[in-house]
Length: 214
Image 1 (cartoon, one colour):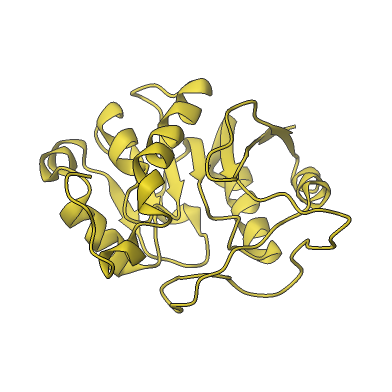
Image 2 (cartoon, one colour; image 1 turned 90 degrees about the vertical axis):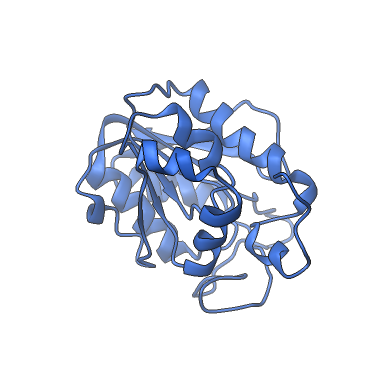
Protein backbone atom coordinates (compact mmCIF):
# COMPACT_ATOMS: atom_id res chain seq x y z
CA UNK A 1 0.00 0.00 0.00
CA UNK A 2 1.28 3.44 -0.87
CA UNK A 3 0.07 5.20 2.30
CA UNK A 4 -0.22 4.16 5.93
CA UNK A 5 -3.88 3.44 6.71
CA UNK A 6 -5.62 5.42 9.43
CA UNK A 7 -6.84 3.59 12.55
CA UNK A 8 -10.34 3.66 11.09
CA UNK A 9 -9.14 2.21 7.78
CA UNK A 10 -7.20 -0.59 9.49
CA UNK A 11 -10.48 -2.39 10.22
CA UNK A 12 -10.74 -3.13 6.49
CA UNK A 13 -7.27 -4.68 6.08
CA UNK A 14 -8.07 -8.18 7.37
CA UNK A 15 -5.07 -8.31 9.69
CA UNK A 16 -2.09 -6.35 11.07
CA UNK A 17 -0.97 -3.56 8.70
CA UNK A 18 2.68 -4.53 9.14
CA UNK A 19 2.12 -7.89 7.41
CA UNK A 20 -0.42 -6.69 4.86
CA UNK A 21 1.91 -6.91 1.87
CA UNK A 22 3.58 -10.10 3.10
CA UNK A 23 0.29 -11.96 3.47
CA UNK A 24 -0.94 -10.71 0.10
CA UNK A 25 2.18 -11.86 -1.73
CA UNK A 26 2.05 -15.19 0.08
CA UNK A 27 -1.37 -15.92 -1.41
CA UNK A 28 0.01 -15.47 -4.91
CA UNK A 29 3.13 -17.50 -4.11
CA UNK A 30 1.05 -20.39 -2.77
CA UNK A 31 -1.17 -20.40 -5.85
CA UNK A 32 1.88 -20.37 -8.14
CA UNK A 33 3.20 -23.42 -6.30
CA UNK A 34 -0.02 -25.18 -7.27
CA UNK A 35 0.10 -24.40 -10.97
CA UNK A 36 -1.54 -20.99 -11.30
CA UNK A 37 -1.44 -19.78 -14.91
CA UNK A 38 -3.05 -16.85 -16.74
CA UNK A 39 -5.85 -19.11 -18.01
CA UNK A 40 -6.62 -20.44 -14.51
CA UNK A 41 -9.92 -19.54 -12.90
CA UNK A 42 -9.63 -18.44 -9.28
CA UNK A 43 -12.25 -18.03 -6.58
CA UNK A 44 -10.99 -15.92 -3.69
CA UNK A 45 -13.22 -16.87 -0.75
CA UNK A 46 -13.51 -13.95 1.63
CA UNK A 47 -11.50 -11.71 -0.69
CA UNK A 48 -11.85 -8.79 1.73
CA UNK A 49 -10.12 -5.62 0.59
CA UNK A 50 -8.20 -7.56 -2.09
CA UNK A 51 -5.10 -8.05 0.04
CA UNK A 52 -4.32 -11.08 -2.10
CA UNK A 53 -6.43 -10.08 -5.08
CA UNK A 54 -4.23 -7.14 -5.99
CA UNK A 55 -1.37 -9.59 -6.58
CA UNK A 56 -3.45 -12.32 -8.23
CA UNK A 57 -5.76 -10.36 -10.54
CA UNK A 58 -3.04 -8.84 -12.79
CA UNK A 59 -1.67 -12.31 -13.62
CA UNK A 60 -4.99 -13.78 -14.78
CA UNK A 61 -6.85 -13.49 -18.05
CA UNK A 62 -9.78 -11.09 -18.12
CA UNK A 63 -12.75 -12.33 -16.10
CA UNK A 64 -10.85 -15.24 -14.53
CA UNK A 65 -10.76 -13.88 -10.95
CA UNK A 66 -13.88 -14.09 -8.79
CA UNK A 67 -14.22 -12.97 -5.20
CA UNK A 68 -16.84 -13.56 -2.53
CA UNK A 69 -16.98 -10.93 0.21
CA UNK A 70 -20.11 -10.30 2.34
CA UNK A 71 -18.55 -7.16 3.85
CA UNK A 72 -19.37 -4.64 1.15
CA UNK A 73 -17.50 -1.80 2.88
CA UNK A 74 -14.32 -3.84 3.05
CA UNK A 75 -14.39 -4.67 -0.65
CA UNK A 76 -15.29 -1.08 -1.54
CA UNK A 77 -12.26 0.12 0.43
CA UNK A 78 -10.03 -2.27 -1.48
CA UNK A 79 -11.36 -1.21 -4.86
CA UNK A 80 -10.80 2.44 -3.94
CA UNK A 81 -7.45 2.24 -2.16
CA UNK A 82 -5.68 -1.11 -2.61
CA UNK A 83 -5.76 -2.05 -6.30
CA UNK A 84 -5.13 0.06 -9.40
CA UNK A 85 -8.47 0.95 -11.06
CA UNK A 86 -6.87 0.32 -14.45
CA UNK A 87 -6.19 -3.29 -13.44
CA UNK A 88 -9.87 -3.67 -12.56
CA UNK A 89 -10.89 -2.21 -15.92
CA UNK A 90 -8.62 -4.50 -17.91
CA UNK A 91 -8.89 -7.74 -15.95
CA UNK A 92 -12.60 -7.43 -15.14
CA UNK A 93 -12.78 -9.39 -11.87
CA UNK A 94 -16.21 -10.46 -10.67
CA UNK A 95 -17.57 -10.21 -7.15
CA UNK A 96 -20.49 -11.44 -5.10
CA UNK A 97 -21.56 -10.56 -1.55
CA UNK A 98 -23.38 -13.73 -0.49
CA UNK A 99 -22.57 -15.06 2.99
CA UNK A 100 -23.73 -18.62 2.23
CA UNK A 101 -20.46 -19.58 0.50
CA UNK A 102 -22.49 -20.25 -2.64
CA UNK A 103 -19.92 -20.62 -5.41
CA UNK A 104 -22.47 -21.35 -8.14
CA UNK A 105 -23.35 -17.65 -8.44
CA UNK A 106 -20.45 -17.17 -10.86
CA UNK A 107 -21.48 -20.01 -13.18
CA UNK A 108 -17.78 -20.86 -13.56
CA UNK A 109 -15.76 -24.08 -13.12
CA UNK A 110 -12.78 -23.12 -10.97
CA UNK A 111 -9.24 -24.47 -11.13
CA UNK A 112 -8.15 -22.79 -7.88
CA UNK A 113 -9.89 -21.76 -4.69
CA UNK A 114 -8.17 -19.77 -1.95
CA UNK A 115 -9.40 -19.00 1.56
CA UNK A 116 -6.85 -16.96 3.46
CA UNK A 117 -7.77 -16.10 7.07
CA UNK A 118 -11.30 -17.43 6.55
CA UNK A 119 -11.21 -20.76 8.37
CA UNK A 120 -9.78 -18.87 11.35
CA UNK A 121 -13.25 -17.30 11.74
CA UNK A 122 -15.68 -19.76 10.13
CA UNK A 123 -17.60 -22.38 12.08
CA UNK A 124 -17.64 -26.01 10.98
CA UNK A 125 -20.92 -25.75 9.07
CA UNK A 126 -19.45 -22.86 7.06
CA UNK A 127 -16.28 -24.81 6.30
CA UNK A 128 -18.47 -27.74 5.22
CA UNK A 129 -20.36 -25.39 2.87
CA UNK A 130 -17.05 -24.29 1.32
CA UNK A 131 -15.99 -27.90 0.82
CA UNK A 132 -19.35 -28.63 -0.81
CA UNK A 133 -18.74 -25.68 -3.13
CA UNK A 134 -15.30 -26.97 -4.10
CA UNK A 135 -16.73 -30.42 -4.86
CA UNK A 136 -19.54 -28.89 -6.91
CA UNK A 137 -17.82 -26.11 -8.86
CA UNK A 138 -14.18 -27.25 -9.07
CA UNK A 139 -12.72 -28.84 -12.18
CA UNK A 140 -11.51 -32.44 -11.68
CA UNK A 141 -7.99 -31.39 -10.64
CA UNK A 142 -9.01 -28.22 -8.76
CA UNK A 143 -7.26 -27.28 -5.54
CA UNK A 144 -8.43 -25.32 -2.50
CA UNK A 145 -5.72 -23.58 -0.50
CA UNK A 146 -7.01 -22.71 2.96
CA UNK A 147 -5.09 -21.25 5.88
CA UNK A 148 -6.11 -22.17 9.42
CA UNK A 149 -5.01 -22.26 13.04
CA UNK A 150 -4.53 -25.88 14.14
CA UNK A 151 -6.35 -26.93 17.28
CA UNK A 152 -4.37 -28.42 20.17
CA UNK A 153 -5.84 -31.66 21.51
CA UNK A 154 -4.29 -31.05 24.93
CA UNK A 155 -5.97 -27.64 25.16
CA UNK A 156 -9.33 -28.82 23.86
CA UNK A 157 -9.56 -25.66 21.72
CA UNK A 158 -11.19 -27.18 18.62
CA UNK A 159 -14.03 -24.75 17.88
CA UNK A 160 -17.47 -26.35 18.13
CA UNK A 161 -19.58 -23.21 18.35
CA UNK A 162 -22.04 -21.88 15.83
CA UNK A 163 -21.58 -18.79 13.71
CA UNK A 164 -18.79 -16.61 12.39
CA UNK A 165 -16.23 -15.39 14.93
CA UNK A 166 -14.54 -12.03 14.34
CA UNK A 167 -15.20 -8.89 12.34
CA UNK A 168 -17.65 -9.26 9.49
CA UNK A 169 -20.52 -7.55 7.73
CA UNK A 170 -22.54 -8.29 10.89
CA UNK A 171 -20.05 -7.66 13.73
CA UNK A 172 -17.28 -5.30 14.80
CA UNK A 173 -15.92 -7.73 17.40
CA UNK A 174 -12.53 -9.27 16.72
CA UNK A 175 -11.76 -12.94 17.31
CA UNK A 176 -10.07 -16.02 15.87
CA UNK A 177 -10.66 -19.75 16.29
CA UNK A 178 -8.95 -23.09 15.72
CA UNK A 179 -10.03 -26.28 14.00
CA UNK A 180 -8.88 -29.87 14.30
CA UNK A 181 -6.96 -31.29 11.34
CA UNK A 182 -8.63 -34.63 12.09
CA UNK A 183 -12.07 -33.06 11.71
CA UNK A 184 -11.06 -31.30 8.49
CA UNK A 185 -9.74 -34.57 7.03
CA UNK A 186 -12.98 -36.35 7.90
CA UNK A 187 -15.13 -33.58 6.40
CA UNK A 188 -13.07 -33.80 3.22
CA UNK A 189 -13.40 -37.57 2.96
CA UNK A 190 -17.18 -37.31 3.28
CA UNK A 191 -17.14 -35.22 0.09
CA UNK A 192 -14.67 -37.24 -1.93
CA UNK A 193 -11.85 -34.81 -1.14
CA UNK A 194 -8.45 -35.23 0.49
CA UNK A 195 -6.43 -32.75 2.55
CA UNK A 196 -2.69 -32.39 2.97
CA UNK A 197 -0.41 -29.95 4.74
CA UNK A 198 1.50 -27.53 2.51
CA UNK A 199 5.23 -27.15 2.96
CA UNK A 200 5.50 -23.37 2.86
CA UNK A 201 6.68 -20.84 5.44
CA UNK A 202 3.98 -20.14 8.02
CA UNK A 203 2.97 -16.48 7.78
CA UNK A 204 1.14 -14.78 10.64
CA UNK A 205 0.64 -18.08 12.45
CA UNK A 206 -1.48 -19.73 9.74
CA UNK A 207 -0.19 -22.76 7.82
CA UNK A 208 -1.75 -23.72 4.50
CA UNK A 209 -3.80 -26.79 3.73
CA UNK A 210 -4.29 -28.11 0.18
CA UNK A 211 -7.54 -29.86 -0.62
CA UNK A 212 -8.16 -31.81 -3.83
CA UNK A 213 -10.43 -34.57 -5.07
CA UNK A 214 -9.40 -37.89 -3.55
